[in-house]
Amino acid sequence: MEDKDIVALYASRDQQAIAETAKSHGAKLTRLAYGILKNLEDAEEIVNDTYLRAWNTIPPQLPRFLFAYLAKTCRFLAFDRLDWQQAGKRNIPLVELTEELARCIPASHMEQALESREIGRLLTDFLKSLPREPRLIFMRRYWFGDSVREIAARYRIGESRVKTSLHRTRNKLKRYLEKEEITL
Image (cartoon, rainbow, N blue to C red):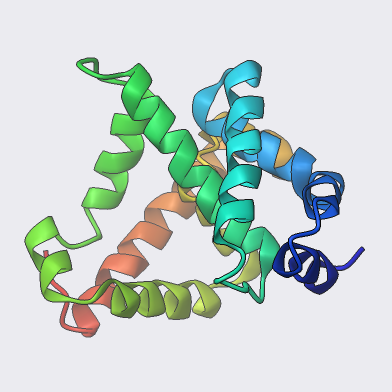
């Protein structure tokens, strides 16, 4: 079933929408949540929470890109769970990701000065400008939270190539944002 048909099921409050969502996107959402939480039971619970959130928000929202909508929801729920689990602790992989991106994304006071949509538009434009491989590597690292080792295995390339690609892409992002007058 196509995504637009699944959204129509949600809009008509047909419970089949959840079953169709699970069939079409369940495995991808589970991988996404597992990549963040590293626990299958928690990942499956987050995916179920994602379905519930979709049920409660569609309508009034009618997403054009259902998987993107679900993935965003799933990521937020997974990171919320991770924050709850790690309350008072420092999670090394999450700290590492945050520190890597902090070098090229503006500080929180700048983010407050710019609307989040503008930052999102700039990031989208930047990612569209990248060649396919660096874009995929960047997205696997910073959207899906994959480790360097996992990315290297997925694309059958060396870890050093992944690290180099990420370093170069972060530098390009920093220069791009500075060109757009967003400085650190």
